Image (cartoon, rainbow, N blue to C red):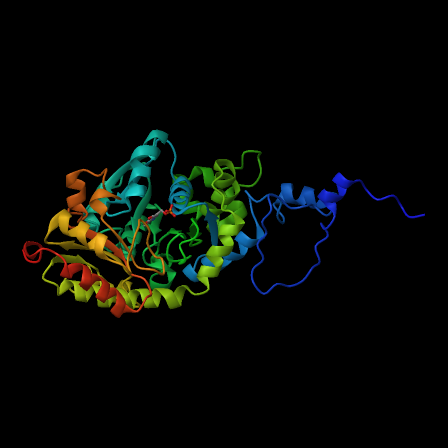
Length: 433
Ligand SMILES: Cc1ncc(COP(=O)(O)O)c(C=O)c1O
């Protein structure tokens, strides 16, 4: 007589758990909160020595596969995916700064990062000084204090396309034994690799170009692997001190990648901004075509920016790929493969003209996002920068007639035709200065 079958409730939970093993071509999505331990010892080894995977907040094979690809493309030793670009900036800063510390930040950054520093990190006791003249080495040096723990900037800045001379600022960081953290969201590893120019950590919002399809939010921190306990340990005691339970320090466990190791072992598991493996899958899918898309984005942007600059309705175009941009002299050295595809332009006709263009375009999508395969348009003064003071808006080139575009990979003639049609409807007085 055969064994009696388990009951209905037991079968509905357990039948089919023994999934057939096969080798999928696409990275499998390990959509699971945790992983079974096949033996008593496996559980011991996971919790004791961090071997294998136990719980997705701490690590997941899908996420791990995408992290390895991201680290390789940026020339880093290791990468840590987190729930958003905002979480990546937060994690990168907190890997090096804590209460009582000070950070020095480029004034030309995404408003969300600025808000993080001023509204949130300030409450954690981390003070921020901003550097406006980011090409001026002395301005960076002057801002550094004995308790400065991080220098931070964006490769191509959100809004006015200011370029950070990563090598110059990394050398200043090195003089003082401070890590330079660079947000490379606008350039991506295809156009620029700040770690090769001396940055300690790079962050990206993977929600943008890296995913490309605009379906998921995510962020990544990538470590260049140059942490030196003897040189850098004094400014980062948490990385060289024994772990909370008397175990090895982050520097002993992770060597040159101690900052990222500490973020992976301590910061993200404790704070909890882990990425869903489903999002990791979409980010990984996007990465496989990053070079093709970014090449096309940059080519299209160069054509659209040049066309815009020739239009009588346009007062100025802030695209670093144009010779008229104040940082254009750095492009040949920093961005030889293309100058990116997110920039602003300002219409003579002010807010009314900007509103008319936004309401008239058909191929461009009106939304707050960037790096999508489709072209996007936004009026920063009433959206992304609505809470900034008029002075702050003027400093970053956001005026009433300014529009931000993220140029997609459509046929460039269609993008120009769309803008041309929108401009054609502008009232005569909005067409010249
Ligand atoms: C330069 C830059 N960094 C970080 C972020 C934040 O990324 P996320 O929206 O993925 O949190 C953004 C968002 O626009 C950004 O433009």
